[in-house]
Length: 107
Image (cartoon, rainbow, N blue to C red; front, side, top):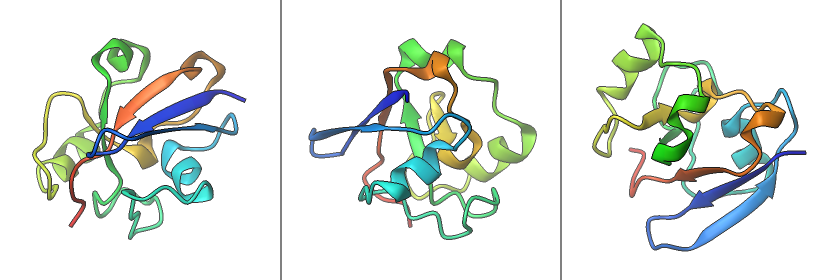
């Protein structure tokens, strides 16, 4: 099971084990992480699962789709070049050690 580290806005970090094939959003919800609301349930409709991918990991992820890019323009926290919707990141063994920062707000 790949491990993912979430860094909260206050600097606190949480490392959790993720099921291969699940999304980062589902993983966060399964582990009760604060900071991921996922109001649309992972249907890429609300952008309340916004995360910042550590720059070292960006090239290991598929690029943002046009739909994801459009939703990220409406996030509550500032959209940055490393912004992603966690519902659009599928866990693979290659993501062992993935580091994500949570924004200071989702709504």
